[in-house]
Image (cartoon, rainbow, N blue to C red):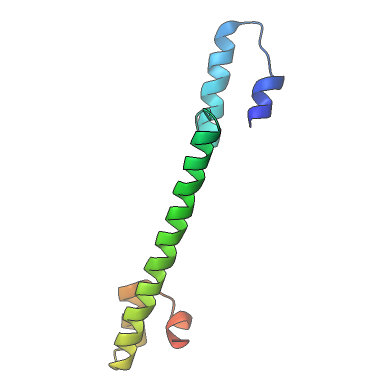
Length: 90
């Protein structure tokens, strides 16, 4: 969206501020300060993806243990948040 900032110009200075605020609302982001912030944001997103993968692995481990103990698949699905198909594949 940075390209919009370079191409859109307003004659009234106050409109630039309103434009920036609306752009931030639409994108959910503020101005990027530079490459350092970009890299930190990217690392943060990668960390979140790793956390989700780790959580999924833990859920599957728990579900496998429950399944081996003979607990009902629907109960396992409800407790772990996994789908019945995911549990059946364990």
